[in-house]
Image (tube, rainbow, N blue to C red):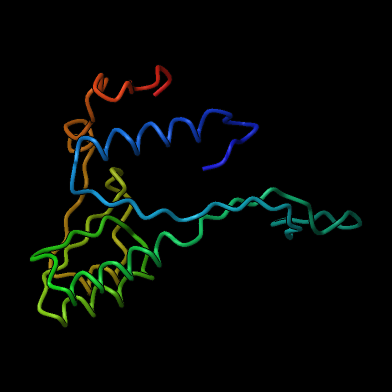
Length: 160
């Protein structure tokens, strides 16, 4: 993340989180994507006759995370680096990587990252997966990191 006028500390919080989780899970490897912010012209959903049909907006896009995950999943399957993988995503772009990893004899599950039970898992991911799971609010509550890591001088930001 980069500094943002609306959330000036978001990059500091992300860095603290990545340091804390890397300390907490020593075998974790982090592969980052990128965020881009651009001013683009977009069409209005309901333009008013006689007024402009488009408006300039700030568009934020995340790039690279799904590709990184897919490439590492397939590579790790080919290198026999896991027995079972769990992909936490609802992005159908990952379905082919899951199918390829399964073709290498690996079990690959998919967990829907939405704790909202109304958000259904993408059908293509569900069909590609060896098994599926739903992440519920109780799972998120039980999976919180400790409030502080004194060894590396990191503590949970007060506004989290």
